[in-house]
Image 1 (cartoon, rainbow, N blue to C red):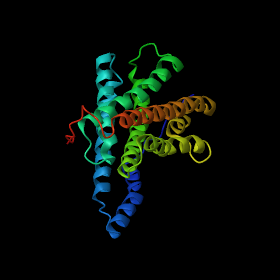
Image 2: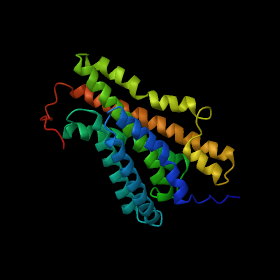
Image 3: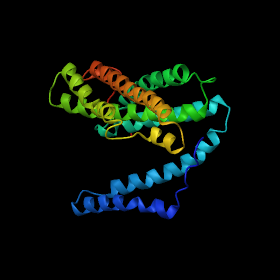
Image 4: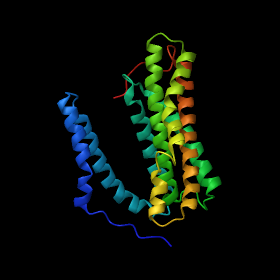
Amino acid sequence: MLAELPIIPLRNLAVTLIPVAAVLAILWRWSLAPWSGVYALGRMLAQLLVIGYVLTLVFQTDQPAVVGLVLTVMLLSAGWIALRTVDRPTWRRRGRAVLSILIGGGVTLGVCTQVVLSLETWFEPRYVVPLAGMALANAMNTVSLAAERFEAETGRGVRACEARAAAMRACMIPATNALLAVGLVSIPGMMTGQVLAGVDPLIAARYQIMVMAMVYGSAGLSGACYLWFESRHVGADPLDDGTPAP
């Protein structure tokens, strides 16, 4: 039997901002420009409020076009954000980032939804959208780390193949640490939510195994694809005119 989740009052929810305020105060005291943190916090609040309303509508739809549009927005946003760690990213590099995230996130998402879960239709939003968010977000973070490290290595004059290897090792650290820590240091959000909702912990563990495999796979495939693309084009990309994307 599923338990009813308690509703968090807004007053109690506001208490969670106290540690955040402490961090922002430290950044200000150390002259580290806390406004980026304030902006990120405000944007997070706005985005979650909006997505709450959007998901309510999306979960009620039976139109594949709507789900496809949501996934497209998520993919393009992930590709755009991924290259915020590099200097003057060009349109071609952004395109390679989007393609890499599409390959890594798309393959693992397809395996999970169509093979593991065996959904009747590919566009069941209650499953596809949350899982896509996990896959694309981790792919995005991995590409971001890979891009930053690859640019730093090639900027020091390291050969492309060596820079690729160093970047791949670095970008996979978070995903590898997540595998090592799960169940020991952390209980992942999806499993926590299911347990709080009354799902048998052993069943919740199966879902979390699927998610962790999806996350690691999407991260590794996306990072590898991006670094492969970049190592082929670094220093000699006839299609890249060097025009930075805004």
